[in-house]
Length: 152
Length: 264
Image (spheres, chains in turn yellow, green):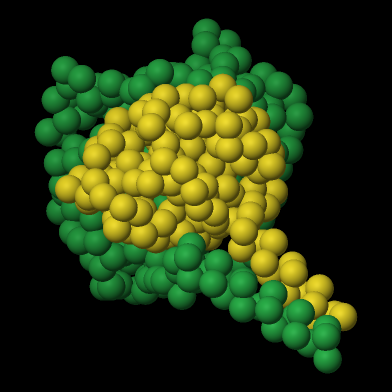
């Protein structure tokens, strides 16, 4: 029974942490990100980055990205919104890897400084659909997930 | 037997999910803060003493700010071949991309002592922040430390350690210009909370000592605090969600103060 529960927990964590929405987001990354900013829960003051700064932050090649919208918090929190529309679906994996690295990087940065930010990173929501990847680190992961679910 | 079959099926589904998500748990972190992750070339001498790690507890206001236009109509050639070293405030400068022709070496919670021992976040090599910076031989170094040292029992220890940092940098990079940036003030609320020694009185005390240290060491002290404080020497409400870490508008004021210092 313990094994069964363990396997179930692993499944839940994986499905929560990274999910394919099964739909294609048609709204622009700017629109998607601003909707998340308005509707999800954040404690920090988020600032939109210019595209070149956003790509640098995530280590993404401008040649792979059609458009993007990234909001970052101050140095006091790990809160962040990133929406990347890649040039084709095969490049979404590249965006996923960039997001994984960003999570590791921020965890390393915050774990001994503001440890309360680490659970936010652990519960960060990553959703893909078509050529779009949406990544949100927020104060309330389940709310962020439901907001993303409502987007198209 | 049934339970084992269920467990096996669930584990199999988990693996499929993992593959679909392409979770790169074994990926090496390469989000580089600087333009590269150079190996160490210097051998600094850190002081083996416990360092308190203040843990700011942010109580920010949820609010969005518009897209930055930090580099509009500005000449940033004064930052060519330069490096910023410091704590989480430097992280903000890097993230906001306010100066794009400089390299950044920082870690949240970094101090004048741990700069010799701690690697940047995401470092693949584990090279200490100081070593990573000096190995690239910059013309200018902009230092920003003190926030995480405010809780130290003796301010003199902070100044002694800062002196060691400057001396080591002068030895390793004899031709480089060194700029010591003042600590920035905190909000009235944050100062009143007095967590980990973070008060504006203490910040003024540290800045006065830093000013004297810079004279002694013949390096440039840059008073960035004046650029972000109000007429009472306090960080205005709304300048930082947690009363400490500046939002982009106030980071722009900070960079403006640096530009002015470099022009003079």
